[in-house]
Image (tube, rainbow, N blue to C red; front, top):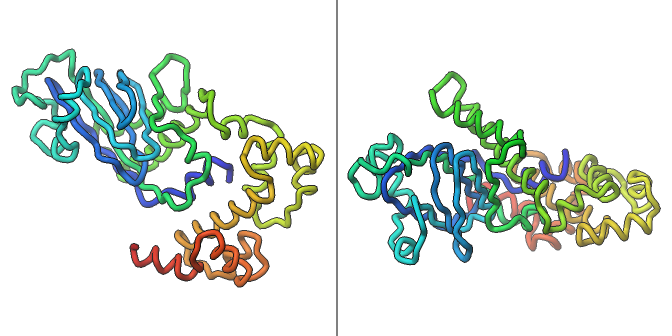
Length: 315
């Protein structure tokens, strides 16, 4: 596994949700804050987005927007003034009104909206477990806007094209294809942000040869008997060099990061597998279930057994 894949695996819950909507005329809708990540892909037309506490963003065909922290926001056909925001219709109610998917008219109810203002979007959500957010995910901005630019992020553009094609016609296997494409969309949006970001530690950490090599080694085999010396050898540098660069980039020393990741990985295994505590302890590098339980309790404030029981009970 790599760092981005592991960061997503640690927080992802269930299947993503998506809905295709088409709107024309005058419309303004609000998405309430969500305990997950929201996204929008504009397939046709233009619209505006205003995240809570943010500034308006103009969106055009092919643009993708990720709201990784589930920030509440407003979408509208045109300029977002205070009155429009205040009177925005809840998205779920608006989506279920006649015409939300067939373009027969929104907002003004006339069905004769200006065709230049028609917009078709893919809107959706990813369920996330906020209790174990990887720092890479935590430092994503409130809104990740990825404009459609020729030659930029071809994988993201391809995923958007595949999604649009899959949604045009119901085809055999769509029930499997759509969630997989939505998972790809999330990966490509994060990847694209990392490629363009000028702020945040993690894009730098994963582009730094030494830090990236050390992170790859730790994530590839968290159960290995890592020491600073062994990790430095894997990264091809001296121990002081590794300690200095890793700590500066990641925000904690290599062995402190390893301990945190082992326990986060253990929590993921408790959630997603029926493995015994002894088996999980071996997979994450602890010599016994007792040693893992003690460290887990110190990190999460509960025992592994109670943690798993709470998840199974839906609390």
